Length: 160
Image (cartoon, rainbow, N blue to C red; front, side):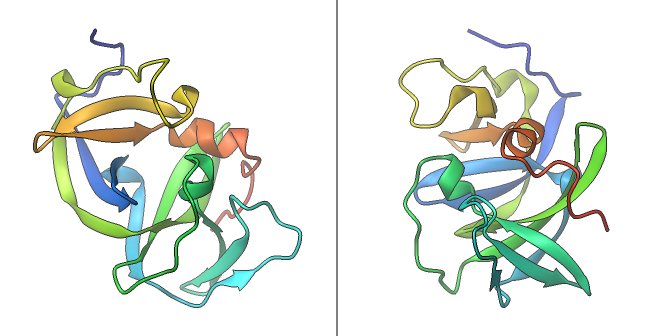
């Protein structure tokens, strides 16, 4: 069943990997992709955003999507990247950094190939998924970034 998830023709996306799952984030929300950098852990912070990184002189919360999507934490590797994003959350602009096991490329995902996330049989909370696309004969998860950040209490933080 096709969904109401629509994009003008195609969704320009940055594709990244967490474990063996492929995710797509709208390219227009990605400010930059950085090599791993020093992470300052924040005592008593949530496991979702338990660290801070310095991005060009600004303090930015570091978010671990593994926690949201029920994956185990993994040791950081040479392929680990920090994806700095800028998104609108509840009317505020939020800058955050995401940990990715690997960043693949920038690609277009045709809107006709994007479907609603099934309500059952998924390993991720369906309400946090904007859609499931098809890319190179694989499924690709399109997270609902606004909902993820507003649900997990990061709205109104890290304005740079």
